Length: 364
Image 1: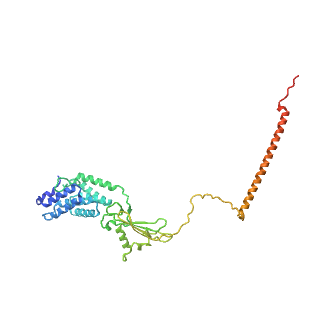
Image 2: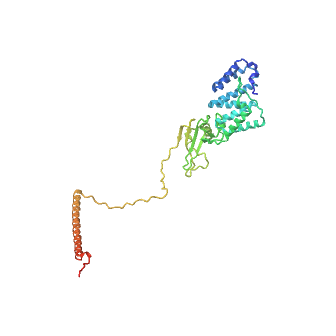
Image 3: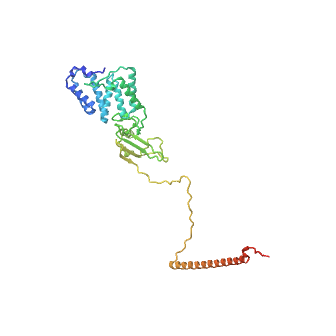
């Protein structure tokens, strides 16, 4: 049977704490999570006056529900508060496997799949060792917290494990290796996801290698730490790191070491915030033609003819010459036609004299 731990404290009956827990339960059931958090926190303040407050499992259940409501809001500050609360409960409370489930779901919500998978595997090992776990109701109600039961918790853990085992392509990978310890929220991994609630910006550093320029991605805080490593004694701006040697060893550019040529800083919504860059060198490399070269036409060179001074006289003279040539040609054509006609007439007379080739018959 579910544990109704709040009924063990008779001092809570008809008290203000019970009324506050009832309001919190109503807000939780109606998905008013921020209001439920307010009522649950007020109930905890009222419960501090009771005896055996710290040893009561009621406190752990209320704090669990507060963390669950905070995760539902998807706000970064709420997620950080929920994470800290759950970690503290895990360290100080025993017999609540649902704490590992809720914390792993928080890590999945912030795209920290590696951390989530560790907690899921540990919680599954607890369930494999013992099937008898204590289930709890929502305080002042008969509604059971689903993940406090063995069957539902096992099902949810398997579902989360399947989600973690899938491939999640990151939008970028941080150049630093200790991102989780350097971030303020401790909800960041080397894999950078723009949709993560914990994503607060990105720094992209590019070198000037002309063949394959190196691109380094940093979380905002990781880039600050990188600058402190490069210049521990003097605080430098982003612009001061231009012309700095490339972070990749043996990255050469025309037999010279490549240098940082551009630094882009992006906001949390993945829009460009600022950019510093070296001036680009203006040079054009002659491009060699690819494939067969098309055969070009060769134009004949004609000598220049001097332009006459009086062009009208030349044009009129050329027109007269053309007209006389046409007349002479016409006369030649006319004479030729007459000669052909005469030759045809002579042949016709000859054929006629021979009776057109027909033999004459003589009668005896």
